[in-house]
Amino acid sequence: MISENDLKGLLAFESESDSPVLSVYLNIDQSQAVNLNRGFEAALKSLLQQKEKSVSGALKRSFYEDAQGVNSFVLDYEPEAKTLVIFHDASRDFLWHRNLKISLKSSVHWLARPYVRPLLEARDEYERFGVILTDRARARLFIVVMKSIEELREALAEADVRKFDASGTDQMLSQMSFQRKADEHAKWHLKNVSERMEKLAERYKFDRLVLAGTQEVVSELRHLLSDRLKKSVVGTIPIPIDAGVSEILEETLELQKKQERSEELELVKNLLTAAAKNQLAVTGLKATLEAVVAGRIRQLVYSDRFSSQGGECQECGLLFDTKLDQCPNCSGAVDIVDDLLETLVVRVVGEGGDLEQVRGTAAERLALQAGGIAASLRF
Image 1 (spheres, one colour):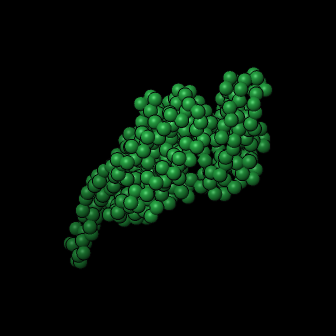
Image 2 (image 1 turned 90 degrees about the horizontal axis):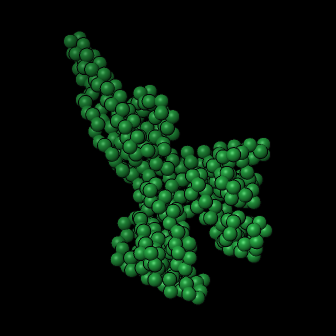
Image 3 (image 1 turned 90 degrees about the vertical axis):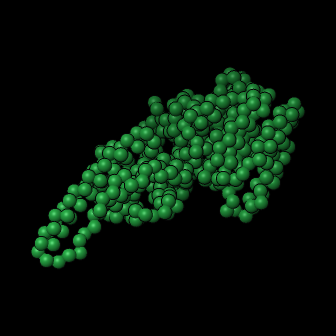
């Protein structure tokens, strides 16, 4: 699991000019035939060989050392996730690795800083979800992050709320009394669940909350939640209290996906409208680059298919959507940037801005009306 501190450290890391950082995203998903019998080792070897061809002169030695370090690590690695992420700079004895439970495309990058865009996009796509699964006697609480689920607490409270199967006046009165107590206990139980989740929300900082169980119980629980938790509820799942963890995860991810696509479309609509009215929003690559350089971006929004090359001035830091030899602002040399979006992402996040990669209908609309990229502005 990637923490906020992990990302901050990676964004702050910058290599020496004569020794870039080798970034490796290696798909090791054992459900894919190509990765069985350590097939991912061959994929890594091929990617490193391809990247080595683009390295010239004195930098070849640095690349070789970084590649050797990554190869050595992977040779001893036993697959336990779907993607392995490695950042390595041998010159500074820097080796960072994590497992992801989501499948990312294998790729290799050798740049001045760790290539973190896939991590940031995955974090955006798979926000932290809290899940409460409860009936009138028991509860199970979960946190879902990047297709990984963790059960936090089981059986917060238990009570026998079965109804008597009885007949006769005395038995009926006894059953009514018992049922009333059972209802009171169930209400106490749900209130207790709500209070516990309030504390867990503070601890785990989840973005959204899912309520799971029967419609009746979920409705009763929602009524007992604090206003803050009520606002974070994004949907409900009709699922039994003893459902398997994998089933709970699958249902939550499906709900998460639908919620994400819906919110992305609404975001793009609002952004395009704001830009048309010149209300703290811009669309298109050129205007977005200008806003990034000025430090104005609050949220960078782009299509999952957006890509662009460009340039970056070594002296003043201006960004360009075309390749130039000399900066028109300060006459400094302009470096060619093969992945301009990566540069934008690092700058925006480094200055406290947010990212939103959109997919599906939202991506199509953004591509059609804004060239695939836009931003909301701070000022």
